[in-house]
Image (tube, rainbow, N blue to C red):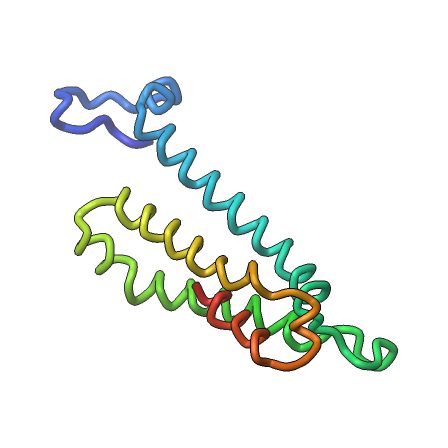
Length: 141
């Protein structure tokens, strides 16, 4: 069991009531929940977006039912988030000297990365890669 901070002057073990009474506990719970919801929504929406908006489908579904982009785009997303977490997250948080500023910056980056996706439509996706290639950098954001 975790001990209460030494600054509180007691060596009693923390109970669940102590944790629930802390505002930091609820704040971290909300942040974690929102991050999980955002990631799960993104992970479930990407395949539909790639198939029906970007028209990343195979020519012959009987021989190869899955288009490569359905695997590449989530891979790009996963690798970019892993690389950021390993190499840049600690530096970024330390540089901004806060936890709130990086969360706000991340939300702004997600919004900026989503704007180009709003302009891809099946009508212009049919013709060329002129617009469809934007899926890869947007997935990395």
